[in-house]
Image (tube, rainbow, N blue to C red; front, side, top):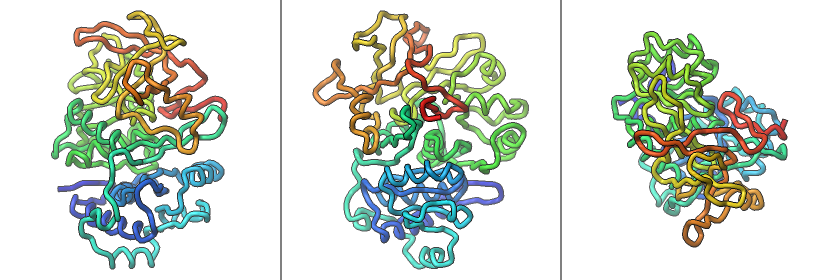
Length: 398
């Protein structure tokens, strides 16, 4: 079965498995393993997917690095996360810091080495130790209010929770075709990867030069994409006419306007999802959106508890606005090398057991009644963070 497609390129599940096994062995030779971080500085492509899969097989965490980022931001991410080994391609190698040992996928020596190592299954014997659910799966840097980006450390437990929520809520089977169009530096890209490859579907990779509009529509039609997650901004640039194969559509990253639901909901299942990076991509999802009804972020997905609290951590009355606090095992571990910031955002849960935590989202919400039960309505922010095309931006960082 085809696992990944990008333009004229096709990679079967066997080819993806064997190629990622080979790369994983080369990375293990370089000394990576559990709790180490491997940078993946590859634009969205077959190679970027393969690289992430290979890092996962080593037991290390992957750090997506957009080669187009300013040099200072890239340097901070690499130093702050402790990266010593990264994966890239020759096209962007010269733009990356020399402090990291880069495995350049199209370098002749690397190609030769990859062809010489085993393509067999990578086991705990190769890794030297088993991978634990509480260990880091990936690190993603988000905008920081002090002007310094902060790295969110997400665990395998949290990622497994996302896959389970996708399976139960959005329905993907082996015959599905899932769009991959999010920037690798945006955690929606991880959502797309595991949505497809975690459930045996086909991942349709959008070239990095395509952002939306007619170009994206042509890919949706040409590859008969059945499932996609898009920001409202990207979705609004596409004409829904002729996209009958797109049966499941998730909007996330920004508030979804009712007029977008009116354009897209007919003839397909359309959902509104919500979740900060610190909650492993998705903590909430609506039921199927209905034209003419209010757009909410629904209720919590599996693995999450939610409270709407006032400034003294007291529950507000039903229907009153307050700050959303998330709890549960799917929360991120915290911010890498930022213990003070972690303690300020991941706080003790006064309603839980010993050691339980809550994450302060900074989002102001209110509970509303619906036929399916209580749902959350997004009101705004309690700080100076804004969203631009789905990306979190702290105004203090500008």
